[in-house]
Length: 187
Image 1 (spheres, rainbow, N blue to C red):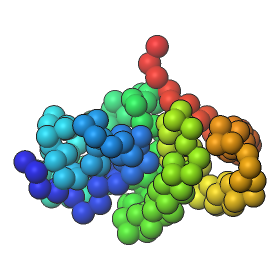
Image 2 (image 1 turned 90 degrees about the horizontal axis):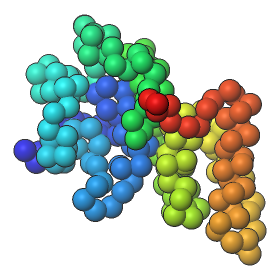
Image 3 (image 1 turned 90 degrees about the vertical axis):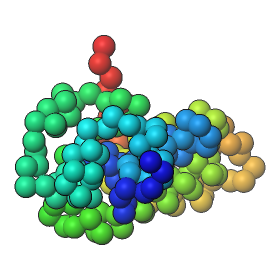
Image 4 (image 1 turned 180 degrees about the vertical axis):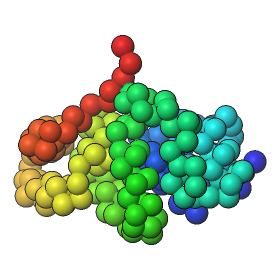
């Protein structure tokens, strides 16, 4: 199956911020088109969320379903992450339920734009995951502050030093908001 299955591939039907995932921003074979994007089923043929939500019920996200929060979300309640943060799954879906998917996508696009800006201009080859997690977890206004901060960095400073300063800025903001910018992996 190669067809696009969803209108918005940047939000997983399960609530994951696909547009802020490192694999969404990876070129080549390991790249992911986002939830229900072109050729998604070729890469993720066994996604139960997609099968139930999109294919079976013809919905965009699980919070559109009358059975939302079904037992399929039991694993999400564990609080563990995979290669992408799951910390905002419920907040994302609840926001969509209360405010509509278009409002969510508009807000998410601000974060995706900031992430693309950081990846294009300040990726030292080791910062993609950190930038993705930061853009997924921090509020838009704080990300915009960091984006403004990057414009004050002197062009004579090496990319590596700029990355350090940007990471420090993101970490300070996260700490002040008591947000952990690390994946919560099972031990």
